[in-house]
Amino acid sequence: MSDAVYDLTLERIALIRRMVVAWGGGEPGAPTIHPEAPYGSLDRDGDIANVTGDDEGAEEEHRSLEQGLAVFAHNAQLKPGRYQYHNGLAKLDHGTVGDVFRDAQTGETPEHITFAVTPEHLALIPHLAYGWDPAGNVPRVDPAQPYGDGATYTAAIARHLAAVPEAAANDDEDGETHRIRLHREMQPALQIFLRYADLGPGDFRRSEASGLWEPA
Image (cartoon, rainbow, N blue to C red; front, side, top):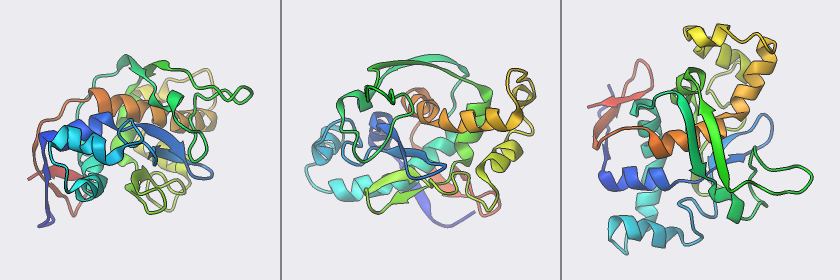
């Protein structure tokens, strides 16, 4: 275990639940937190203060959520199933980031999303390469290597899903097509995970063996 300890507070969990997940980067792309409205409105510091009750320290708290997002993704628990959520991207500018649900012809994004989160999505969420977008000043998944290694992203997906029984039961499409679709679906899957997965506050350390955050 690393000696560095991350304090996942109730306030940080509340901010993570408010995060707006978009789609960013070039091919293959990956989920990113919306750079202009990371917590739902264009007043980032106001959104943070509404949660923390502190008008100061918003930048520091925001920056801490690079690790906070990874801690949450590595430890929270969610059951597979169909979920609904209000799509915050519907009211935000489309210029800097994308939305996998946006209609290519009209440019419209639906306000309400119903999506089935599968065991495959849940198996991939801890393996996403969480980091920081210095240009957007927000947490993101690495859009070039979204699963954090030198393999192609579809090869990485196949490796991470090797132990998931449901991953072998997709008769409607070939394996590569299925993995490409799964990756695009990580935007709504991660959005649902952040809003509905269960995790309480506590201290966490990053395991030197696995690279994952674990309870301290």
